[in-house]
Length: 233
Image (tube, rainbow, N blue to C red; front, top):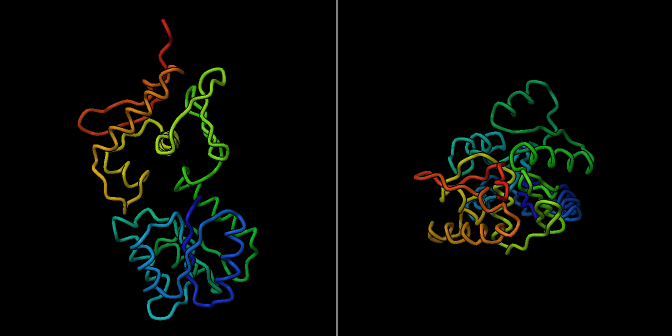
């Protein structure tokens, strides 16, 4: 379930947006000011932020710039929600770091479509669509993993999330610290060696389907998922 932070000082609009997002399956956090939004982000990093331009105190555009300047929130998907529809305003908002710009009034359907589009670009692992890499297929909606010839692969919850992340970022090398942040969450304090344990379990789960070698160790760097599958001798 993707986490959405809604930063909107008009209570009626915030609640309407929240109702539609929850109905669509999102986990929603509300904030009525930039200060509340920053506190929410400091507590738990959301998957996407819906950010009103006009907020009490610090503006949404200023907050977007602040988030883009911080290493922790630099990749946070941001959609600006505003009544300001002039081209100059859109340019200003996008240049401040917003990924998209939606003018009020807007329909719930368009908002949900914009969120899905931003997540596809920035965080493909947050979507519920099935993903395939090599012989592996993972379906988040059914929590099923299959290998060659549709052979079902049983994996634990943590290994499922780890494999999902690998499969949505194939061929890229990820350090243990990066995997902890993206799979376990950036506010979960566990040893980096814990990643090794779960990678080992994941390989053991993939072994019967002859896919264990797809999870490669890159010495001194971390792990990656390759599309290659060794053929049985």
